Each structure stands twice: as C-alpha cells, then as structure tokens.
Image 1 (cartoon, rainbow, N blue to C red):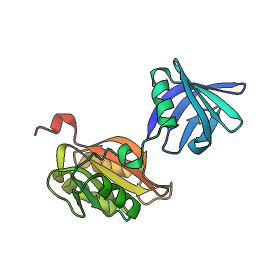
Image 2: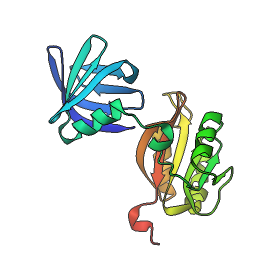
Image 3: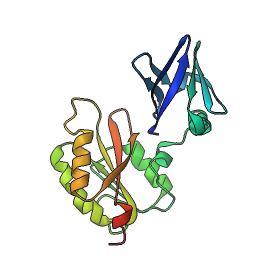
Image 4: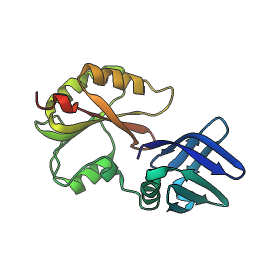
Length: 205
C-alpha cells in the first residue's frame, strides 16, 4: 500500500504526534512517545468518523486523526486490494518480468494479461525488474527505453538493513537514468517494490 501521513494518535491514555504508515499487512505508527505495529490480520474493526479512524485489534484500540484520509484508510484496511491491483497491472497490459523468480506472481500476471514477456519488449506498460546487486541497476536505462511514456518500472529488491541494494541506491540509479521514484510497496515477505517513472515533463521528449 505504502500510504504515509503525519497525524496524531490516541492509544489508551497516551496521545502523540508522529508518522503513520499503512503497509500491505500492518499499520505502523512512530513517534517519540508512542510506537504501534498493528497486524491487519488481527484488526476486527476500522471505522472512519469524520477526520478520525478508530482501529480495534484484539483487546486493543487506537484512534488516528487522519483528516481527509480517514475514510480511504478505513476502506483499504477492511477491503484490501490484491497484490496485482496494488502494483497497477491492468487487464491486457504489456508486462516484462525480469529476474523475478516468483511462480505465484507469474501466475497472477498470467491471469490478468496474456502479454507477459521474459525479456524487454517495446511499449511495455510495466517492467518488473529483480535486483540482487547494485550492478543490476545498470539495466534501468534499457528498461526506461522499453516502457511507454506513462509506463512504470517496479524495482524488486531484498528487504532488510543488510541487503546488498538499498533504497538510496535505487534512487541514485533512477536519477542517473532520468527516472523518479513515486511509490514503495511490499511485494512479498522477502522483497520490497519501488516504482520508478519517467518525469511528466520529459514524457513528450
């Protein structure tokens, strides 16, 4: 999901200002006074009331002052999209799947579109590029040439602070290739997905 917002949270007797993050399988809140990690599988209720979102999980409860985002968060928590939808794969899209050994995802793609390629093809709507080392990021330039002006590249890299490729590495390589990062999402237990696109101002060039 990758939704992130600055807000205030009330949890028990504690009220704190910090940053809330809605991930694929959990809601995270971080501040100096309060830290929460709410597994979505344990959420029994997520109700928006005006600008506030009340989340109940187990015997616990927290209220997030999200403003205009409250209703959208409630819907995302109670009716989450599947992975293929979160990654923006539309019916009939042309997709390149490179260096990604995930049979379940390949099956999800095949169920959504027949136009899936194991190598770069001209006019791709989406490219999924598996990255194991920094050197693999050199492929971004070729991926950029393969996508449509409004297409996107999802870089899939291992999670964790000890991973060989960091978010900073991806952003630096994207900038060098003339791309900008617009979104981070959970791809799987092992992989993080970062979305790169051609800047709007450069799409007509």
